[in-house]
Image (cartoon, rainbow, N blue to C red; front, side):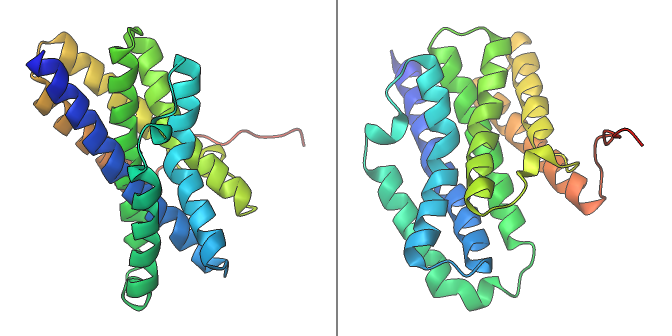
Length: 209
């Protein structure tokens, strides 16, 4: 029982931090397109809860944001954060990437843990982690009339898959849950940041000439 309670608390903590991080990334991109405050909030909430909502519906669970107003409120704080600190954030071109990467890693892990808690096998949980981390970004990009990031050559969803595989491997080896979460989180972040920094990408499909 204590282990289950600790896992539930950790999962909720990851989802709240991930919500804040993802919401900021969505609001920042909306600001770059000169959306108003409401439009920015919609983009923020879409990227923050979109992937988790799809995951929960596929798992047959009540969408996580419907069980507590914390996620809606958290997105509101993210909007205020961007509004107040916009002039400082503009000086850091890497800011949106950092927040987006944090959200990607945190939501990937939260998705894996929740799927495992619902009795899903690891291969399903890895897919659910990927959906949790990346699907919200697809919704955001559609709202912003942009080509979804995961459909471009930039490595994004594959970082989620890699983090999920590391999570599975460490769990199979009997490594403690806290250490497994930490390492998996770092793997997603490192792969994403290195891919952007050194322009690492998957091969591009070639159409008929």
